Length: 166
Image (cartoon, rainbow, N blue to C red; front, side, top):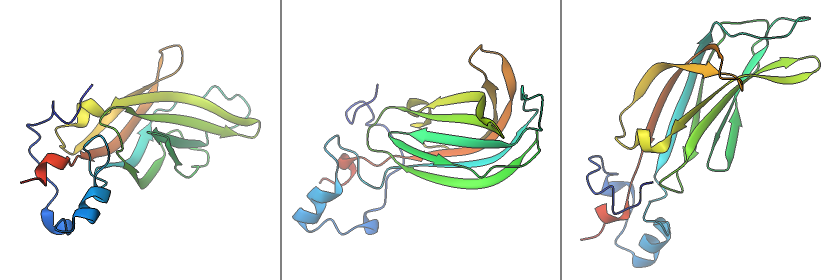
């Protein structure tokens, strides 16, 4: 688990010109209790998926992706009859704690309700270098069987209080 003191070597900083920190009251409101600033964000673009395996026998796969991170849940649109869907949908999450995981679940939106196709979890600690990742990730079902791949662009922008203090 990371905290503000264990990440002293984070190279990227949020530019001071983004906010006016000369006003002490505004400066105090800008920082969260754990040392993160409210400018810390996780950016995710769901680009596409391929080779999705659906166990639906009566209809084609109608996939959507649910993304959750630190009590925020967002969802892509449903793509009809497609095991290789393209979304190109972008999402932004506030980073309020220096820990946690981005969780993605791909669903088949069948007539009888949503059924999970596969899951993916990306730990925030793996994103602390703040590099942009554009890559394929394997999806696994609850039995740990590979059930397709998802292509994502992910980047965390982390900003800590120590960068603003003299």
